[in-house]
Length: 173
Image (tube, rainbow, N blue to C red; front, side):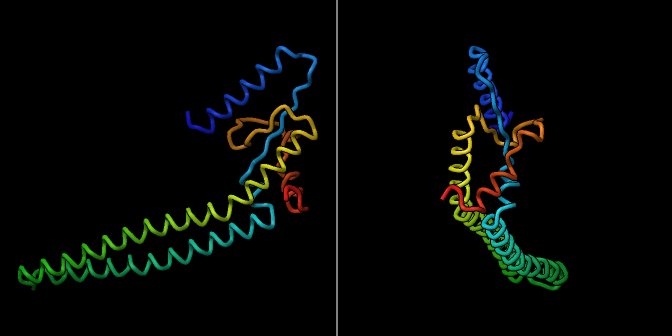
């Protein structure tokens, strides 16, 4: 069981524990698909576009390095029979260095994308949290759950579109 599923199970258990003893109180649950909500907002779309552009740029740079490694490997294979031992070691060393440089560049790219994603998404998600908290308090929700961890929910309790519209209208600032 992954972390999200465990959190959802705990959240449902907590809701049920508090709702059973107090039968007179109405249980009101909402569900939000945060990924969808993020992709529906103006700021979210811009952040996702920026990340996509960054990823494409880095992939292009990595592709050029990968093509160079493939070319070196082909050259090495075709020229090995013609090389002396010193030349073989030198060319193999060059190939291994390029391969290691590529691996390092790949890892650095993934790290940069992750850092940029965190930098762009943190303020958006913080604002979503304020909106959800206010909505939950104002409308007496017992719980508002992350939709990605809920196996089934009725469309009537889906708050995704609503919070996206609230975000774009300036709520949570």
